[in-house]
Amino acid sequence: MVETAILLDSLRKAGLRITPQRQAICELLATSHEHPTATMIYETLKSRFPSLSLATVYNTLEVLVRLGAVNVLGNAGDGMAHYDADTEPHINLACVSCHKIVDFPSQYVQFLDEEISAASGYRVLGARVLYYGLCPECQQKTPMARRRSDHDDRGNNA
Amino acid sequence: MVETAILLDSLRKAGLRITPQRQAICELLATSHEHPTATMIYETLKSRFPSLSLATVYNTLEVLVRLGAVNVLGNAGDGMAHYDADTEPHINLACVSCHKIVDFPSQYVQFLDEEISAASGYRVLGARVLYYGLCPECQQKTPMARRRSDHDDRGNNA
DNA sequence: TATAAACTTGTATTCATTATAAACAAAGTT
DNA sequence: AACTTTGTTTATAATGAATACAAGTTTATA
Image 1 (tube, protein in one colour):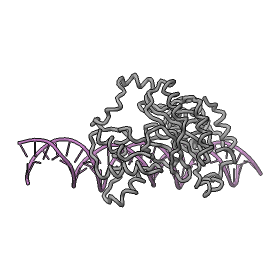
Image 2: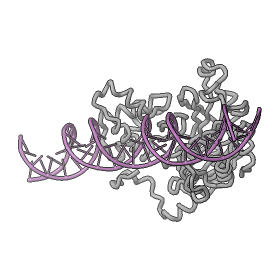
Image 3: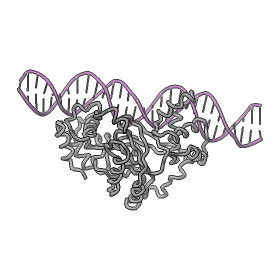
């Protein structure tokens, strides 16, 4: 769980203004548990800020990412970027059915970090550990987990 | 390193045809060390197959992904999907500067797998461990690797 | 060889994201 | 207060990766 204030502070420290829109976006990012996309943020805040523009959402997200306060998660299965305000190394669990992404604490991610920094020659800037599968709810909904074009899949692996 | 034959076999087993185009795409996926995008594959093979269509590349990749023979990696920093023929759990190291992605073997990824499968309630279908940073070559190119003071960067590009 | 099914190709379309330019707001200055 | 500068939002246009689709081509099989 991330404090909204941390995100706002990183804006402030960079000399940027805390506008109502930015505040709301940071709040949403910090408190939301599914990691939202730009569109999700836009849709959610539209009622509170009728004049809000998608461009503002993208702008704010881009700033936060550039400041390193927020991470971008690609590949949730839908074709859009999800945003994660928790920049500590942790695991994201993405559901391939409902496309929600939740966090999962792990004791091993730290080791990965050390392993790579020590042995790769890379200057590591961040990480993204994404596991995907079916969340408990979606396992109930779709007993056999059939996706739309499984018909030409002559029975093998996943 | 992945054998081309493994990819071709998974097509065959699924009852699909091994066309010259598909063969070439699988070959490229298996032997390439940077994990290519659809466009990169297209550009590379265009000289050998002047009639090749981007659609074919996307079709083939989609099939291979559906069969589980190939993974999609989002978010290399450029806005496109990269493809990875190595489906064994391993780490991808993406360079934020040159956007190449290389593999890094790790002993800990196995543990992650077990940890999650056991404790999350998810039916795990796959994983994607992506670290990003500056590759050794790009560290040379950009001597100071300036990353903290990017906020007063007025030249605002992406 | 006929016929159907599987593939490829070219193009049109969709849609997330980025760029651009104009309107707007918040200081700062005199 | 009016004037200026700079930062921000907004609306809209442009870009470009990925997908859909229609039509042509190849392959398998009888």
